[in-house]
Amino acid sequence: MKSDSTEDSSSGDERVERRLRRVQGSYCCFKPEAEASGDNDEAEIGLRDKSLKTTVEQLKRRLSQAEREIVALKRYQSPQKCQSHERCEILRRDLLTWRDDHEKRINSQVVSWQLTEQKRIRDEMGGMRKVYDTIQRQLEALERQSTRSYADFRRQIDVWEKRFKEDVVSLHDSDLMELREQLKAW
Image 1 (cartoon, helix red, strand yellow):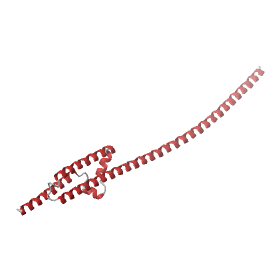
Image 2 (tube, rainbow, N blue to C red):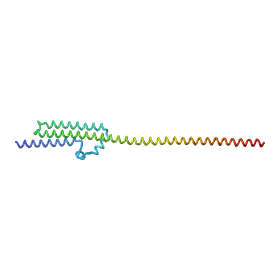
Image 3 (cartoon, rainbow, N blue to C red):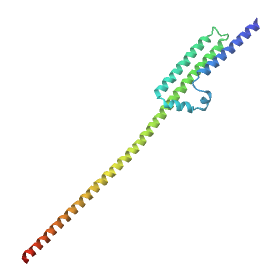
Image 4 (spheres, rainbow, N blue to C red):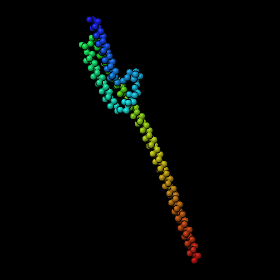
């Protein structure tokens, strides 16, 4: 009899462990390889395309889903149903630790995304400021050139007008002298 109850309790513990592994594996948001390396490029690229608000909401939904699973596991692993109260406490602590670590990772990822986005915006604004300043300098240079060109053009017109007036006056004078000579010749 005792050997049967020992086998039942060990097989029950094994069933609980298998179920716990299956639950952890199916609801985990990040793969262990990504956790170990510290950066998940595919997740970062995919989530970067979404708005930050959508990403935070999605992560909150995942967190609430994980909390529901924790509650379900707590019900399943309640001390009354477990053969070993210590085993249940270990599982409960592991789940709480996992949840806390998961929340920390989510929060640190959100902060990282926010900092990256702020840096990108600052860089873009700096680039736009440089372009704006360059355009402003070019416009000022063009304005100075056009002012100089207009002044030069105005001076040239004044010179031409003066020369034209002098030519007209000299023509009139020469025509007048010619006319006088013709009149004298009559």
